[in-house]
Image 1 (cartoon, rainbow, N blue to C red):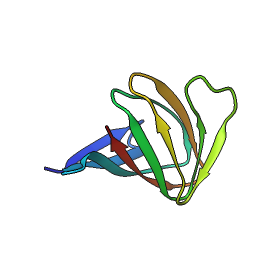
Image 2: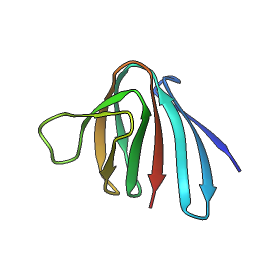
Image 3: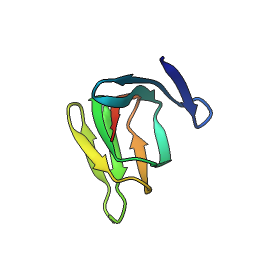
Length: 93
């Protein structure tokens, strides 16, 4: 079953799905700054665009552009600045 997720006044939207490899979401963020909490380990892949990210326990923001990825442990939070509209694939463990 495909699920629709909307966050931050519909500025972030994603479709959730499951495969034999596990659960994932694919989505789009409008330009802006957001903070996400995690309940499981996440690997976020930037499909198109750019995300500037402040990872847990870090003090410097890092840029992730098309084709790059970052990981976030479960039960933490991270901040994201979307530079224009950015699409992503998030895989959960």
